[in-house]
Image 1 (cartoon, rainbow, N blue to C red):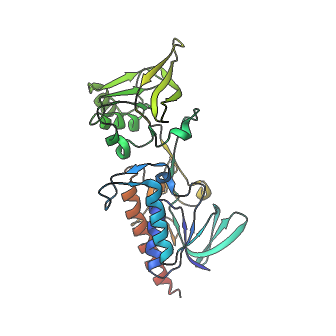
Image 2: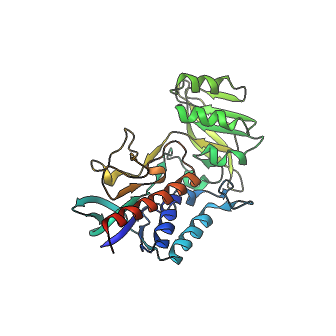
Image 3: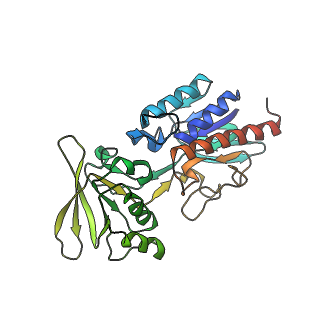
Length: 308
């Protein structure tokens, strides 16, 4: 019988592992299909406190993992496939094996939606990203592009005008799907140039492997052209990694886990932390804070069970 199983090794999962391990709970951490979460595809992280010169995303993840291991956290390269609730404990299906645990911290994160274009994976972190708040400051006084037409795209385009010389807003229709106030704010900004009725069809890299241009196609005329940009921000949404918990843990209409009274879910002993429940902030530091809270909530829950 495990005391704590943690799903995910992004900032929330690893912070939860550090806190649970320091509480002598010997947590088992499942690395899942995307070890390290979105930070594993990030190059330089400049907004995580304590690193005045910044730190590479994968290095930050490895530091946190080593810190958790130092206190007794155990790691396993496995994915969770199912969850069952029993009297006083939980059962989780890992690959083809069922494990029993008193508590479960779901910190499986959310995966950015990409377009599936050639060179996409190679360019992530090299001029292709899904987070303007994370990476916008790296692209001062250069042109960039935002792909999308919803609130996220409009908000990111507006945010990027603080840094970029020009922001191309590429959308497949001739009006944005975003709320009127968000759309009006983006379109009214003199730095934002809408590119209507167009879809991306390719990324072009320079000799150093960095983004050089976005190739687009006009859906009305069929004409193809290139936008010379240094970065492309894909803002077509995220997908929370909650598939194994559908029908068991309460979710909103987009699949994000619902938290109540901190990090608790509708099932006693199951806690949610980070981007799997947060579709507003989606930052490494907020995920880490939620991971801390989930571990403390789990520790308190275990104390109430008088588990040795």
